[in-house]
Image (cartoon, rainbow, N blue to C red; front, side, top):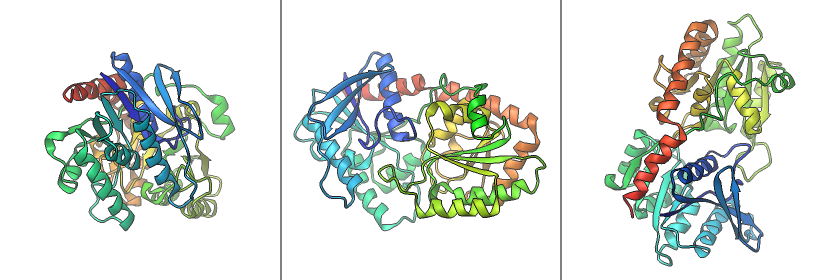
Length: 394
């Protein structure tokens, strides 16, 4: 069985400074090969004239040449579609093409009549469970719904997503498998030392709260800052907040978004010297930050299946997450992390204070968090489940 896992084409594989979908594609390709499957990860080679094949830490990555669009309007959407079309044009007898983003997936579904392959689609879109969405998302839902109905198999990352796409997109239940994201428990682990990294950021072990993700409204960074303002009024020592992630509105943009500018200004005015915005960081830096944090906070208003929670849990760092989307399916409140009511920054502040003030609770949650990912979310476990799902299609 030959399988091609198709990325967005916008973030190079393997991703070094963010890109959850690309990390999913890269890791899945690695671990499927370890299970004996002829699996490759497909990436874009913009302005290239020939295909490249590279083995990266056990993952075979194929870079497909793509000519970038001449227009700038909706450039990233057009790029993804052109990349998907290029994948089909350079098709090399794969039994399964596994898409992971809307516009690349649309191209694979659109050109499917040209080549004979099974189509698999993993839905990473966190907005499907939401009832009220903006106009642009309605268009995305229309396209993504078509892709999932046209696919031989759709992978939902959790039960919440499963219910949403079967009910709202009309995808037949027998064509949907619930298989979560995975995490590399050997890379992300407790007890990592990184004094130079911490010193450079003026941090001390267990004396900072960590957020990892895009600085955007749906991630709830503004709620976290309001909660942290209440936290610092109630803790005597110099607890800090570290916000790791892109400040731009998309990977295709390099400009800071208006939202990021607003929350940075709030932090400067209301929390002087207590908040650090690092921007994207290397994964080797990231795993040290996870491993030495007091806790990870994910205050999202919408969420599909956040890898950052799994990475923190693998690092032995207790997560504090909102009740949005699939977060409650990973965090068992009071067992391997803490949950707070979505949008309620006062509840969030109380949960953070609980962890700061109760080391015994923090250690218990940390141990259970690590155990949870080892048993349920380690990539070999997830890859085995996806391999079994593939086998049913051939």
